[in-house]
Each structure stands twice: as C-alpha cells, then as structure tokens.
Amino acid sequence: MKFYTQTHKHYCGIDLHARCLYVCILDQDGNILIHKNIKANPQALMTLITPHLDDLVIGVECMFSWYWVADLCRQKGIAFILGHALYMRAIHGGKAKNDKIDSHKIAVLMRGGMFPEAYVYPREMRGTRDLMRRRMHLMRKRSELLAHVHNTNSQYNLPEIKKNLRYAFNREGIAERFSDPSVQKSIELDLNLIDFYDKQLSRVEWHIQKHARECDQHSLILLRTVPGIGQILSLLGYCTKLYHG
Image (cartoon, rainbow, N blue to C red):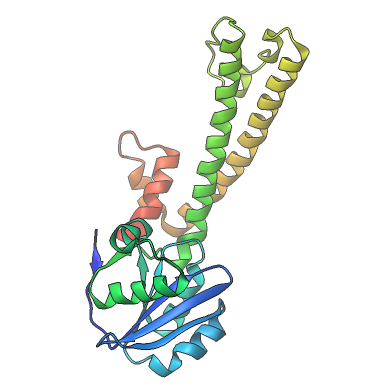
C-alpha cells in the first residue's frame, strides 16, 4: 500500500458518481472551504474550484467514471491522485456514510498523508486496457459454455468427451451424443455461441496486436522471447511495461 504524502495548500476530495459530484475542499489547516454537490461536468467543477487552484490537489476514489476528472486535471495542470477503493474502505469505512461524509473523508485522508494511491492509467492506453478487460469477460463466457457442454454430458452419464472442445473441428457431432431433442438443441445453442465468441475474440485480439505493434513492437517481441509468455500474455505485459518502464 502506497500513501500520498505530499503537502499542499488546498485538498479537494470528490465523491464521484456518473451524474453528480460531491466536492469538499480543505485548506492546509483542515478548514472546510467548499462542501457542495454539483453536476458531473468539467465546466461545473472548474467553476467551483477556480478560487482555490493555488497549490490544489484533487483526489477521487477509483471507480468507473474517474477518467474525465483525471484528463481535466492533466489539461489544466492540477495535481490529481486516484484512491485505491479497497484500501480506502478499510481505512475510513464506517457506519455513517453518504456522499457528503465521503467527500470530506477523502480530503481528510489526503491532508493527513493517509490516502492510499492507485495507478492513474495514462489516457493513451486506457481504451486498449479496457478492450483487454472486455476480452477477458468474453473468454469467461466462452468457458462457461464449454463447461456446460461437459456438465450436460456427465449429467446424462454419457462417455467422457476426450476431444478438446476449444478447437472447432473437435466440436462436430457433439450435440448428436444426446438422444433428447431438447438437450440437443441446448448443446447446439452452446456450440453456436462458442463459434460466435471465437470469431469476435479473433477480431479483438487482432486489433490489440496491431495496436501493440504500432506503439512498441520491440517490447512486444522481447516479451515473447520469455518462456511461457505467448500471444495474450505478451499483450498484457506490453500494456504494463509501456508505462511502468
């Protein structure tokens, strides 16, 4: 766990939501200068914090809608830190919780040097990282379908499927193992969805590889020289290496 320990004249804690923000600004003595709920848009935020921009740091908890705040701070030259959601709950979790309390606690944690930092992933690679996360989600769904085929086979006490169903040519004739037409239809549905996922995953992986080669082909090639690192792991390693050195 890494804490943010730099000192500033002003500390801005934001309880962030998709459509609104609760903003709390403290001075270096802990006095509350602003404590207000506003709409979640750059103009409203800048209008509110402009009187206190002198040596200001903004902190938010890591949740899905932090991107635009980080980009705004980068554009305006404002210090920005992202809070590790799990560690923040462990540090300041309490029975009394609402947006107003949370924004104040975030500001207090920053001022006290107890704000647990998360990595602010650079704007240039966020889309690629999110696409890789989406790929992981699709792979899990595909695995669930494969598991259902095997589980159904065991449910009807049929001989073990010894072929590796991850390959399309091994999936031929699998539905015909079942005598019940409804079960056959269920398995056909699984297999058709697996075929669909395979096509989509191939397109996603091609896009990510193309992006990786265009950005830093040398690092990608080096990663693949490590035993055990194949196509997908090299892409994950590439995204990490590019901004961590």
